[in-house]
Image: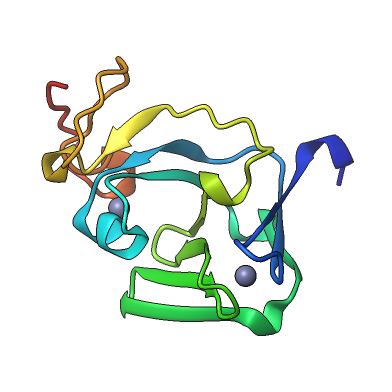
Length: 144
Ligand SMILES: [Zn+2]
Ligand SMILES: [Zn+2]
């Protein structure tokens, strides 16, 4: 595992540290109600990784988990409440929030669940109504 391809991240207080290695499977912005409600922000900047690419390297005993549905297991630091990542077992991917890994070069490729948006973003990237077809969605794009 090469060091230049490994990026370090941490929770808000630093009790929990994570690393991601290699290249993500996708990057973008999610506008869905669940992401907005969970993150208390108008949009979630995500990076998606294969589970083996994500490692908790410090403070695993501080990692809390909550799942409202079987699709998303949300992880945060129980010491500070800072969010870390969300496991999506059905997709076989882990969403490490871009804000958790600030050194990682975030290059968004698309917006998903744009039909639920509360913050329109005119950046020229594709706006998927829900999800891409290869991820079980309709594949329909919407105007910005
Ligand atoms: Zn913390
Ligand atoms: Zn979402």
